[in-house]
Length: 82
Figure (cartoon, rainbow, N blue to C red):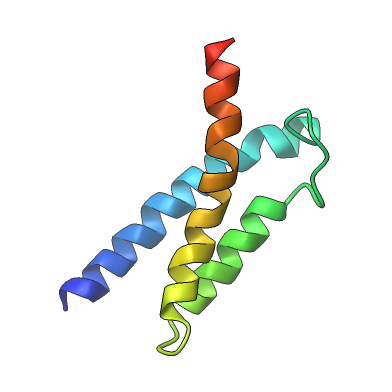
């Protein structure tokens, strides 16, 4: 039961942050770097969100929902330090 509640909260906060990281990409086209697609981060997050609710690939869903944040966090930290 506790894991099910954590899974929902994990999905909410990673979804919120993945959406926030995709806003500059959708507005300008990229973060000054070439990305595969403008909606790359949301696509990876949606893949993770769908895998999060399967029993067999639950761990992969957690990893895929965190992947956009792990990828963009160093870029935003670098941009804030300038």
